[in-house]
Every structure is written in C-alpha cells, then in structure tokens.
Image 1 (cartoon, each protein chain N blue to C red):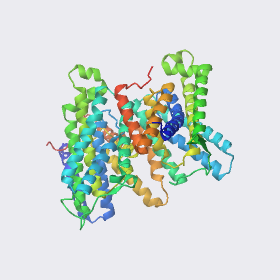
Image 2: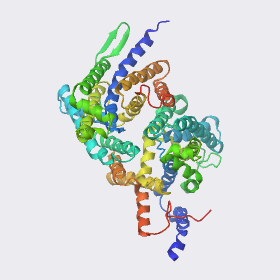
Image 3: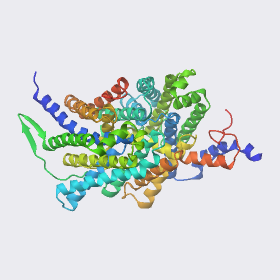
Length: 285
Length: 338
C-alpha cells in the first residue's frame, strides 16, 4: 500500500542526508589529508552557529554578512586548532591526536556555556514550509540539501582542477614522498585545516537556520558525523556522502515507524555491525 | 636502608588515615566530596584497567549506564534487592562487552576505529535509555525508590554518609587490588605484547582475542559496578550523567590527567577533576557556569601535549629519577605482598 507519510519520511531523510553530508565533508577532508580525527569538529560548527546568532541578533547585521563572518571565523579556528593543538602531537601515537582534540571539545563546550549560558538560542527566523502534494518539507532543509550538493561539487572541482588541490590529494596518498617533490606539507596542512574549518562554518550557517544553538549541540551532532565518515571510509569523500544518506534514512524512516531515538539507535547499531563486516568502511578504495 | 623498609608501610598508613576521616568531624559536605572521589576513582580505575593497554574506549558510559539503570529498574519495578540486582547488571554489562568485543578483537579493530565503535556503543545505550521513557523516565532521569528511614541493608541504601564512605572506600580499595592483580599477571604481558604487535604476539602463542576479551569484560563489569554504586549513593540517575559521550569522554580524560599507567593515577584524576570543579564553584559562585570546564579543557590539551603520562606518571618518573638506581617498578608504592 502506498503511504504518503512514509514517502514524506523518506524524502525528509534525503534532505537530512544533505545536512549530514555537509557536516561530514570537512571532517573527512581533514582526516584524509592530515590523518587526524577532529573530535571537536561539531564544536567548531557550534562556534559558527553562535557567531551567526551573536552578529545577527545582537548587532543586527544582515544575515549574509553574519554567515560570511562565521565561515571566516570558523576557518580561522581550524587553522588555530592545527597550529596550536595538532602540530605539537603530529609525531605521537594517533590516539593522542584524537584525544587532544577531545580536550578542545571540552574547552569549546564549556567556553560557550561561560559566554552564552545554557539557554537555547535561535535566530527567530520563520522559515517557510514547502508544500508538495500532501507532503510538507522545511525550506531550510531543502536549502541545506542544495548547499551540500554545491559544496561537494565545489570541493571536488577544487581538489581535481587546481594545483593546490592536486597537491592536497597527493599528500594524502603519500606523506613521505611529497615533500621530496617540492610540496610544503606544512602549507598544505594549514590550507586543509582552513578549508575543513570553512566547511564547518558553512554547515553551521545551514544548521543555524533550522536548529536552536546551545552548548551541548556538538554532542548531538558529533557522534553521527564521525560514524558517517568512518562508514564511508575515513578520508573517502564520495563514500562519506553516500553514508550520510544511508544514516539519514535510518533516522528518518526508523523515527517514522518508532520514535526518533530508536531511529538513532538503529543507525548506530547499523554502524557497529558494518564495522565488523567491513572495518575499512563501506566504500573503501 | 630504613627508608626502603618503611616504604611498604605507606599504603597501610594511608588507608588507616583515610578510614579515620569520618571521625575527625569534617562536615557532611567534605565527606560527600570524598565519597564522590572514591566512587569516581573506582570507575576511572576500571577504565584504566583496559585503557592502559592501548584499548581506548570512548564508550564506557554504556557500562556505567547499564550498571546504574539495570540495578535501579529491577529495584523500582520488581523490588529485587540490589544484592541480586547488581550481579544481574554486571552480567548484562559482561554480555554487552562480549557482543561488542568479540567481533572487534576478532577483526582487529584497533586505534581510533575501536574508539569510534565504542563511542557508538555509548550512544546506543544512552538513546535506548531515553527511548524507553515509560520505564526509565527518559531524559528526566529516575529516582531510586527510597526506603523509610533512609537506611536499609536489604535495599543497600545508607542514610548516614559515614556508612557509605566505608562502603565506597572498600570498593575503591578492591578496584586498586584488581588493578594490581592484573598488573602482576601474565595477562598484562600478553596484552602489552599484543598492543606492540598483534602478529608477533600471536606468533609466540598469545591468544590475542581471548586476552583482550578477558580484560574488557573485567573492565566492563567493574564499570557497571561503579555505576550501580553511584546510583545507590546519589539515589538519582539521568542518561546524561551515567551514559553517553559526555561521561565517556570525562572518564577517559580524568584518567589521562591523572596518569593511566600508575595504580593511583585514575584516583589522582578523580581528585583533580572534582577539586577543580568544586573549588571554582566555591570561588566564583553558582552563577558562572562553565568556568571549570573551560580550565579543565585547556589543562587536558596541555597535558596531552606536554605531559602525556599524566600527573601520576610524572610524579612516579620524578620519584624514580630521585631514587636513581632503584628497581624499575610499575608503581613505587609497593603494597605488602598479599
């Protein structure tokens, strides 16, 4: 039997997949190139969301300006994170690199509490609801979906069509050889961190349109973002993109039949099972 | 040397000093802090039992949550005494550890992949608790049904802080004892070999999967026990405080700050984190939220960069340097032989 509400859930899942794919994109890039998992990635997104809220609500700046400022700031945060935190531990065991960004997670989360309190903040925008047939979709999600597609395309063009992009891909393939070929890895790492941070900023601007921002928001988006990256094969952007849609369907359709939490439980359980079947990720090269 | 002969007495004196604390008339508040340090010191020790072998679990909140919720649910709904409820909870935690651990170790999921699988496990347990809100109260948490008078051995509830203090002290000492048993066992050498090189360890006859399963089920059971103890003490549990990514990371980082390779390291971590939070709260008051976390986060980053062995490890290394030439021991506090 055709169920229009199920179809609505599926399409909403596709739209949610766009948001998740965008979230995973920057993290995946950073992992693929620098070989470090930014556990605090979702907290960088939170910094972006707070920046937009602060500039838009408090200073009354136009939304596009606030968004541009947020993207620039988060991008700078990415560079600072790499320079101050990642670089000193690059030579140490990988798990230390993961944990050190966990320290940054605590720091950012607590600093946000200190600066803005624990209240939920929103932009106070009324986003239109799009009606199609008898189904309803949030305009913010459609926007996020479109931006995610555009972001993936732009990143792909950058990585394949520019010199810098080629150098980034080359260094992710062979860390030892590229310095001998005249590529400065330090510069590449900084550029990657800046782009990864910028991606977090873009994700922040789209999330800010549909979710309230609060200090613990990173904890609700963080785990799912890592799972997507791992499921797609860490560093494999196309894989991460597809994995985001798989996850989103679990959450959306699972949430449709049961409760939203069960959707997440199913998604995480699926992740654990997949790790056992294909530990290198679904779409590993 | 008299100094060397006096050394084995240090832990005995230390424990005696701790045991006499309730008689010194320190107020309820300080006793409460001390009980918290002991409970969390035990939980952190439980994590480090397996964490020190490179098996960094970011999902120990799962076992903590199972311990707290299974015990409390059995007590609240069926009236089953924690004396039986806790063993059931430990069993559930062990089964959970086996179900997740076996494929993990069989398929050699290590490093950050292992960390992320365990992270997912912690989230699964937290979300399950939230989703079962008819029974668990969801995000609002649940209260452990109190007994009239507040004290009952049957319900394992103790209204007087002193009694609970001795219980926590006993459990904490038990945790240290298990740590020491593992430290002196063949299992330790097997796991260290497996951490350095799994193939090499397997080639000389170490059953890597079984060794890892043994240590992770032990750690899971201990953590679940800690969770149950926490529930019995606080009489209120909440998915955020006993499960999920937040608490899991808190466990890992307290151990790192304290030092995971020395016996008292995790306890030092518990002392630091609680004292930092409490002293800042007293200094700046209730209104400023997040200051302790901000400083704590900064400290963690600095620790991992400059002092990866933690405060405990640093102290031990300094002590060893000072006694240059002394026998290389995992921990300088040689407890009297059992």
